[in-house]
Length: 293
Image (tube, rainbow, N blue to C red; front, top):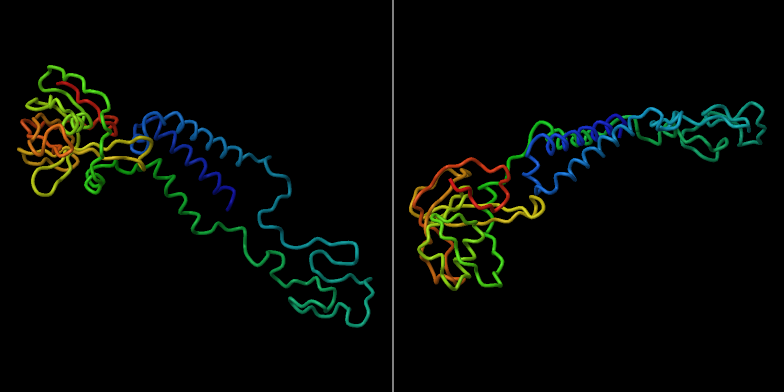
């Protein structure tokens, strides 16, 4: 690959990482918040590598990416780069320097590899066309960020199985509506034997995902490390028409009876009493408690 192409790729990738992690919150679409310092360091290192590659004194003098154009002469009578013999080379019959036969060995000195010998049969001076495709992902870091994970992804993923609460549940606060995460609501519905969630008005925030068979899902996508390991949390909502998919909303409601509360048979669902559209959180990949309005 041409040197300027290598420098360009390193430089653009470094600038893209710095722009994404320092000046926007777009990096949260790919990794969790704690990875930001590593992205900044990676961007600085890539720019440093680009500068080192571009430094004019980095490569030894006379380095030729094209491998030169032929062989130099030697002191046994060979001419410069022609594979033939000098005039003082005394050879017997059959070893003379008659007309060269390209690629033939055994006539003359046998050093004539044919016209392609100098370039090894292919040209190193051009950048392969496929190499230019490498610019597409690095340019996207500068000018276009892929959309955040949303209803399209969530609708194709099953709801996450939440961890089992080993200890007894703490008493619920007296606030009404009660701000709660989707994870805690799921645990209370399916694991809390005291059934403390029964009849309580709760408040949760997430984005809208369509559902078949009635109702819709209040959804959160949670990232543990990066987008590749994301998991989906869902609470089915009844009693109100579904807002537009991917709309962020806060829902107030009570547990929708289904199955036996406090056991795994209980449905993770809500009878909505109110739905309010809200702005998308700055860090949308957390199962956070909604802000009390």
